[in-house]
Image (tube, rainbow, N blue to C red; front, side, top):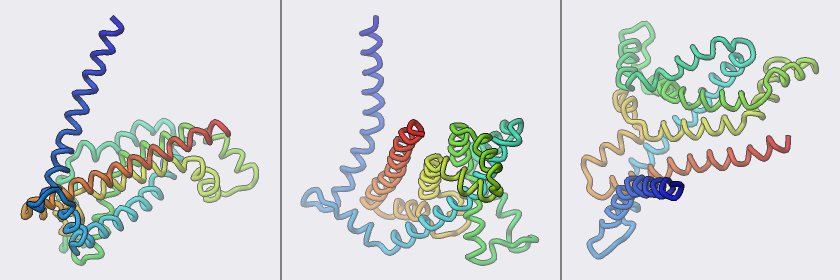
Length: 263
């Protein structure tokens, strides 16, 4: 009975692995066929040398970094205060942070366009910098479910109340407690949320496209509509960037466990 259930588990893992890896292998193999003479990385060379790729990827990377900074500044104090003073509000805050998963991105961005168009009381679509700010706010909204849950899990793993009371007894102010006590203890959770946010922002298409900003997502769609082999190379590059972020999360999470045991 036990061997039968183990065989079933291995069959399920094999089917899942094939289902996941087969399209990826096929995409990678197709991306190597740009030269008719044989396999080559010509499509990757063309993509990486394209000024459009460099500009859009650099723009999305900058927006991801700004989104991470603003998100951390917004979420860490909120999650800390909820954990310390207002635990009864946790279900409400969790519900609010999960809303971006329920509400489609296209609905959110249309709401922004309605509220902040050039004829509104706060015109944020009138120039490029203001639209960049609006796009960054949109990305912060999209990243809330991942960032908040990651940081909240990190805060639950430590004794926030004891650390706060100890710091207060030594005369530390609230900013000092947050920066010198709380931040170092949830560093791995913050980094996990940051890498997830980076992966979300790099691949986002809807908001950047509707706001007319030169992000990597719209560039990927444009190349996909006009080229044959380059989109496959871009898909593999985007996949590698995403999995690099996921790998870094695992590395930081693994390094954090021995530190907690030592503490």
